[in-house]
Length: 169
Image (cartoon, rainbow, N blue to C red):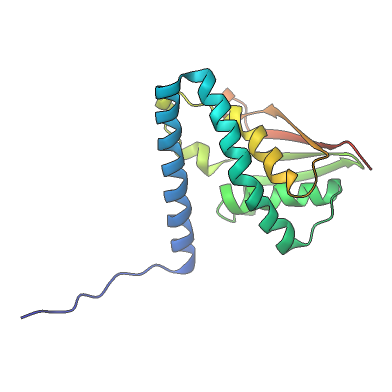
């Protein structure tokens, strides 16, 4: 005699969190292996290239969906949306963007769910890769943006802070 078993299901948000968590755990495991296998310096090179190749398409999807302009305001909206939706599971309370002038703005992240769940024992400092990641996201909008990490949770600061600047008006 056989009985059908009902398959448990998640709501949309539960599915989203599970898929995102699975992706980032997989990424973290691969990073730990790469660092162990190739060494710290080669790992940094591989990680930077991986972030460039994987995050530009994400940026392209956001630029298209949000219809952003290639100026500092568009750049700040792009990194703000990316951070809130990818790293913050949609929670707006941990992400702040400030336009400081026509060519400069700041992104502040007071809590990163990725970093919070990171295996600190693996010795990987996500602050090494984040500037590459954000530059890749912004390159979907324009190649005229520079990203500078000025504060980082993994370095003991109370937030991650990135300065976004454009080379053109």
